[in-house]
Amino acid sequence: MPGILQQLQETSSFIKSLYPHTPQVGIVLGSGLGNFAQEIQVEKEIPYEAIPHFPVSTVEGHHGKLIFGELGGKKVVVMAGRFHFYEGYTPEQVVYPIRVMKHLGIGYLLLSNAAGGVNPAFKVGDLMVITDHISLSTINPLIGKNHSELGPRFPDMSEPYSKALIKKVRAIAAAAGIKLQEGVYFGVTGPTFETRAEYKLIHRLGGDAVGMSTVQEVIVAIHMGLPVFAVSVITDIGIREEDNIITHEEVLQAAKEAEPKLTIIFKQLVAGL
Image 1 (cartoon, helix red, strand yellow):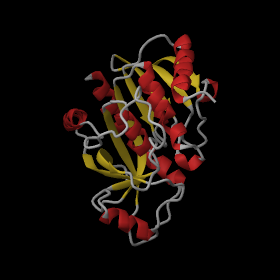
Image 2 (cartoon, helix red, strand yellow):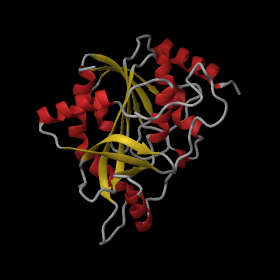
Image 3 (cartoon, helix red, strand yellow):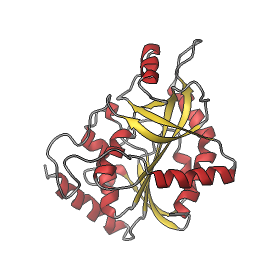
Image 4 (tube, helix red, strand yellow):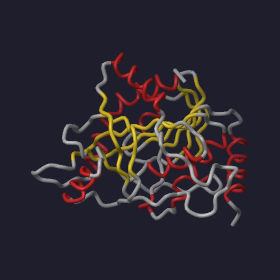
């Protein structure tokens, strides 16, 4: 098995043979947010299974292809479908596409996800700008040998989400009349939704929303020096006294309904970079 640096070289060489342009922005679409890709002037689509060393997405609501094209006048690469630790992938596989996008030349990474609301002030359909995260319940993807060509052994995580990008998004949302929540994303492995006791614990530990993705991707992005903006679509409310059963179908529906607001934000943010 070739090492990570050789794998990245082989993957990026294959992609560049099909799409020679350099994308400026990388975008990852979360559960139920795949329709956002319709906003892109598509120049090339590459299914994951065709890409050397790429995992293949197995989750409903994740399409499983890299989309290259233009959005807001910028060249972008979009992951329609991401990878999750709970699917059985290693942390290294989960974050491999982020490393590839950096290798292709992106200067910014925009992430979206579907998350459970923990903050009692949140409602289903809210957009929460992630200002920080808690990763204690996830496996760090940087465990193991460090490759200095990719980043330092001990990356600083004091600003995992770019304050400058968050400031831009606040202005975009205010101008468009979109209400934004802000808060801390608590990463878990999944695939089970949280118990009542776990929701209460996460709330006490400082989490405003909880989800099964994003954290590992952000760690690797920061390791490589990529500025990150991330937003959660609140698709269910975890802390409630009545019926607490949550289904994946409900999550996808809530994400779909919030998608137009997310589209405005991502489109205008990319245009302003």
